[in-house]
Image (cartoon, rainbow, N blue to C red; front, top):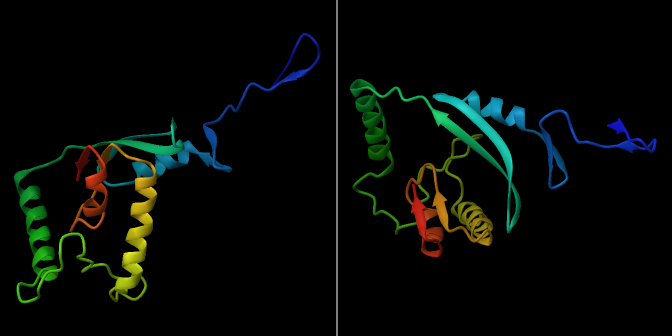
Length: 159
C-alpha cells in the first residue's frame, strides 16, 4: 500500500507468494516445500494457471536422476512381486478399466467395496472430462481405471 499524490491509499498487491483460488488463500511456497519433501524431487514450483475453464493450481517438479543397474533391478523385482500378488493366474481378470483389485482401505486394509470404487472413478472421470483435456499425463496408470474412460476423449494420453 502507498499514498498517492491525491492523498489516497493505493493497493499494490501482496508482498508474499500467497494467492487466492476459489475463495481460498494458498501459500505457493508451502506447496513447493511439500513437493520438495518428496523423494527424488530436487526442484519444485507452484503457480496458478488461468485457462478457458478457470484458474487451476499447478505444480512443477524436477526429479533427481539417480538410476543404477542395481536400483533398476530392485524396482523391477518389487513391481514383479506386486504384480504376482495382485494378478494370480487362477483368478479371471476383469475387463480393461474394471480391475479394482488392490484398492484397500488405509484404515482397515480391507478391499474398498466395488460400488464405492465405481462411484469414485465416475466422479473423477466426470471432473477431468469437464475440463475437456486435450493432453493428459497420468502418473501411476496401473490397470487403466481412468485411462479407459478418459483417453478416448483426448488427443494424447501419457501414463
